[in-house]
Length: 279
Image (cartoon, rainbow, N blue to C red; front, side):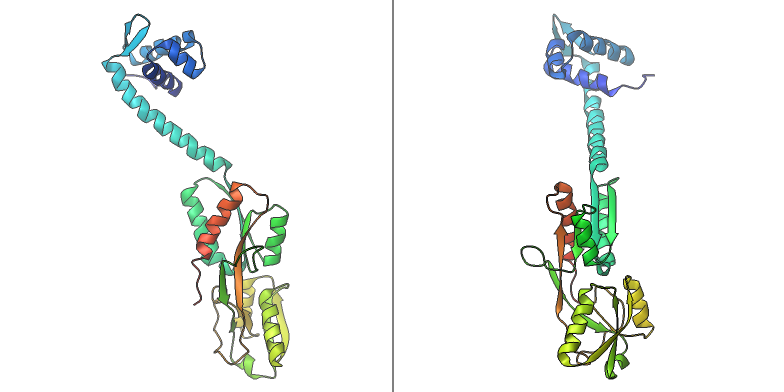
């Protein structure tokens, strides 16, 4: 039985066949002619048969050599592909962030894409407020993030309509009870500004850094909140019970002076952000 065939021997064998001589193969591989000759002798010993018909210094591959050549190309191509994928995975690091509204709509499918296209890649994620994400970008802790803010240049990626969520009785009293994310929060700011313009009194009854906490408080009847449909699973108030709210813009922000990984991370996030629509 033929033992394992080391890939270095197969690479030298392919070079000898393609170059037609030991000396030419040695030049291509950057090794001495004697070293290549020794490799060919070792390979022939492993196979148990000559691989070349020798005509002076020229080498002509024989039938056994042609059979081995076919397998060598397949083996080396497979090895090279595996090495390339492993090298790409080991050097690729996705450092991404999203506001809490888009954990399901953007982060989850982005992670699935990364797993599929870059198996083994290192991934770091940050879920937080826009201010936390922008701070992380400036401190080189993430490379790209979905933020609820206007981009530095150009139009925002998407704009979603802010809505009121909660029990209708919170809109019928003299003072509107508000629940929201711990500031600074663009949604709480938008809600308070809309109520102020309409001359409606308001009171913040609960602040929490967790969007799940906001949803729990709203569903428990503590108060109402201002979000988009992408960000919270609560009952939407009928339009007209409270003042109209603005559209909230979202953008993928990439870290400045970053390399390809920043743009790659941003592309993955933007692909799924652009798929978000008002519902």
